[in-house]
Length: 592
Ligand SMILES: Cc1cc2nc3c(=O)[nH]c(=O)nc-3n(C[C@H](O)[C@H](O)[C@H](O)COP(=O)(O)OP(=O)(O)OC[C@H]3O[C@@H](n4cnc5c(N)ncnc54)[C@H](O)[C@@H]3O)c2cc1C
Ligand SMILES: Cc1cc2nc3c(=O)[nH]c(=O)nc-3n(C[C@H](O)[C@H](O)[C@H](O)COP(=O)(O)O)c2cc1C
Image (cartoon, rainbow, N blue to C red; front, side):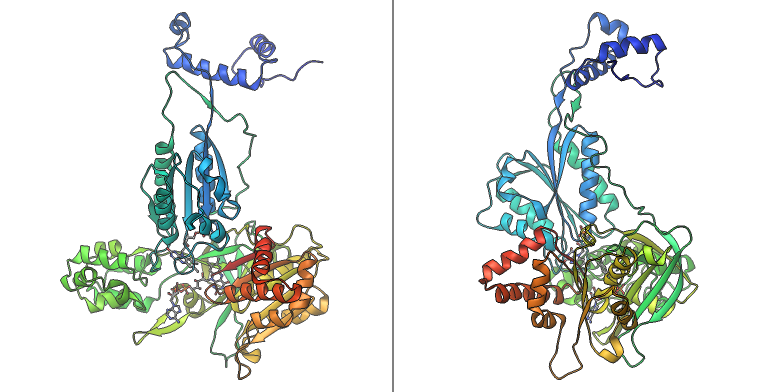
């Protein structure tokens, strides 16, 4: 039987040469071919074939690519995406990379690693992402293994608008060193515009972690590599323009809340978003606030600056870093005292940039404002539609953020831009933010339980649409909550229709302010615990979306309590049951 030809017809050889080479190479092993590749590369590098053929450079045999472990702690996918970037670049640089989610990390075995890249985001108020909590706790805990002989670098992701900026990355960085690992490059703490600093850090990290080159020309080969192993199909991350084709307030006119349902039409085919993904929306600042800042800075009349402040700069966030940059730019002595006296963290609480500029007046230039502010970050919104049902559209459910601090009325940049200044026909820029950890079960017959109070209900509208369009036989159970039944029952008619057409099997609602005592979704979960545990025992997947600060924690605690009560487990066993659901990806959350 003849062997298939190794060399393609496009190889730069004549037919006879190709046949010779095929005959010679046909019986070689992968190791021999890799050795030849290294040898020939070495030969050329040593001065070309003729001279070198007489005295060939001492080409070393190929060595196996060096292992590199990239672990990521991620909630909304940024660190995970960067871990993928490290992996791709590492492979090109001769490493054999392995990417591990903190959720699956075997902490006890960490000491066996030679080189470790850690990419960690911070969530909540300085906490690790939910999926990372177990492994993070083990690393921080007393039973953590010694890591002598491990080389590492940490890239931290965060947001300077949070007091505990990049806390998870900072703590991991310190802890790995404490456990004996050797830091080979300084940690970098990234703000929301992390693309450039992260790319630069990744390059530096791979250089710092590279093993010393042995003598001779060596080609590192990942023998185990299979083609396309980590080349995920990626949804385009480029922002696209969409037209607003529906803009409806879902709350009644008597509600104290305002939640906008936006239907967006893509100019071309909708990007391949899936139920569970979000759209990042590029907002514009409030023009009235822009004018206040220009006035306070003595820069009225600068039209180019006004445009930049409207669409490009974050003119609300006030972090300690903003105050430091302000002091550096202006030399303002009183503002400097805030920093020197360590009062800055308390002072910025509830205040915005305008408060700083008005409290510490200084003559500012356009350059100063650019230096003081950071780029305006887009805001994520869960996609509330399924392409299977709405075609080339995407729907969002956006709650307007309005509040008062230090006697001043404040508005959320993106949500109030949408609520107050966007109407049908307007154009917006958006991009898809995939979330592969918030996905419907692959098996359409699996039941799902969805807990989504307030705007947390958005992705579940997408889930139910998708399950209807795909005629999924699994049952769908929704827990919804808000303030008042009559004013705040988001998508009420749609849920009623879904109950009628069989695409929703159960809905349990909790309206917190319709009775003297407050009732929340976790109370309904507790009331329905027997049925709920029966669904879970039957293989149901459990999803939570919405408020991260209280709701998500209370829901999880309610589920632990439900397991304990229904199954007669002690607290530790009930906790283990819920942790087991998380580890098997049957408990998924998308909270903010
Ligand atoms: C993955 C993901 C999905 C999301 N999905 C949705 C969704 O479907 N629908 C939705 O509406 N939102 C959603 N969000 C939240 C959304 O991204 C924005 O954070 C939200 O709309 C506020 O943005 P903003 O620009 O209007 O407000 P910003 O200008 O960002 O202001 C918000 C900030 O104001 C401050 N603040 C707010 N209220 C108060 C208060 N009462 N007192 C003091 N300070 C306060 C807080 O510091 C808060 O962080 C999601 C977030 C994530 C990460
Ligand atoms: C609800 C919420 C809480 C956050 N809390 C913090 C925080 O305490 N400190 C911080 O530096 N960043 C915080 N961030 C910012 C995230 O760390 C940042 O968006 C990061 O890029 C997310 O990375 P990931 O997608 O890998 O999870 C928070 C973001 C959200 C949405």
